[in-house]
Length: 132
Image (cartoon, rainbow, N blue to C red; front, side, top):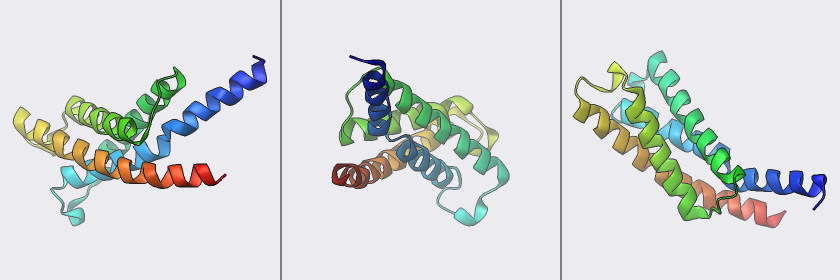
C-alpha cells in the first residue's frame, strides 16, 4: 500500500469518526445539563466547560478512529456519551454543584443528551457521506 493510499485511509477513518458530531453533541449536552435546561442561565464558565468537554470528546473519537476501531452509528453514540460523561465528571467545576453526586448527575445527563444527539447527527452525516 502506497503512502498516499495510507493517508487516504487515515483521513477516511477520521471522517468516519465524525469529530464534529462529537464536538457539537457533547457541547450541547454539557450546556443543557450544567444549566438544568435553563439556557438563559448560561455563563462564560458554562461555555468554557462545554467547549472543553466537546473538544475532549472529539479528540477521543478521532484518536479511536485513527487507530482503526470500527465505528458505526451505535458505537459513535456510545463513545460520545461515555467520553462526555468522563470529561464532565473529571472537570468537577463548582458550576456543576457542590457534591460529587451533583457532579455525576450532571455528567450522566450531559452524556445521555450527547449520546442521543450523536446518534441522530451520525445518521444524518452517514446519509450525506454515502451520497458523495
